[in-house]
Image (cartoon, rainbow, N blue to C red):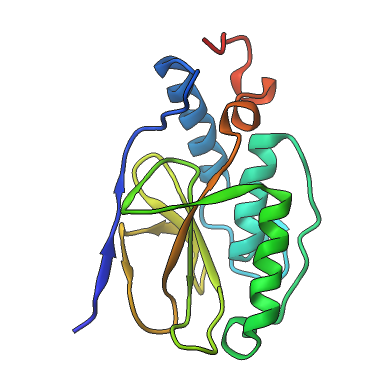
Length: 184
């Protein structure tokens, strides 16, 4: 029997921002995620409706949210199985570009990232999913699609951690997301 980590999504809450602003940010995030829906899985690519992998998908959504654009390095698709050090270094580099912290527990908010990877001493981070308004989104073997809220605790893509952008008020509260809304 497989063990599962069951996640719960709560509405976006950012200290110092009104509920209306948080709902607006959620809507912007969901619109960006949906713009990638059904984009085929193509390793190393990042073009909506043409091809993307999980890392580039998350980076593209974060780029839209932050109005910053980073070049994400391409790793061998099996690095998480055979090169734990490389996979972990790559994840650290990714989260230096998009500063975040680990979230404990099972409650996530839109924009959080779920990191998965093979279990065992040799396994490193190997798959990422982003939290939308009401579901997880990821790139499976076919395309960008919704995923359930239960993540395996064992196997090739077991739950590893939840990451949340650090300065969400200033990162997600940018003009490109808010338009004319007041931050308060």
